[in-house]
Image 1 (cartoon, helix red, strand yellow):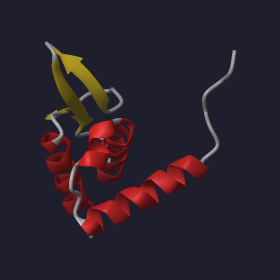
Image 2: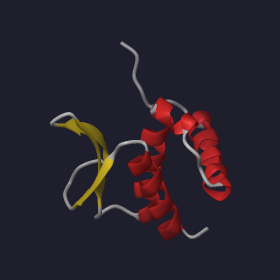
Image 3: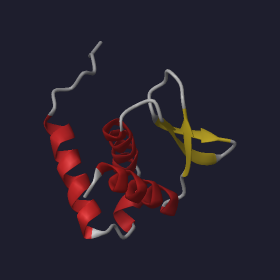
Length: 96
């Protein structure tokens, strides 16, 4: 599946579980937030498509509603592979 198609599929999945998607240009990291009680994912369009996929996948992984939502098998495979790779990466969090 082409990355551009993956982004569209992940955006549709995020919208299905209650997120609105905003695409903006700027010097920020894509992530999710709550604006006036509405769940929102803000994607930086100056970043690569792969970066946008990563941001969407990380938000979806943290939301429990993702598991209760139908995900196309090809998209599920892509997410599972991404989440497995993320889990294997060394943590960049610093402990106090």
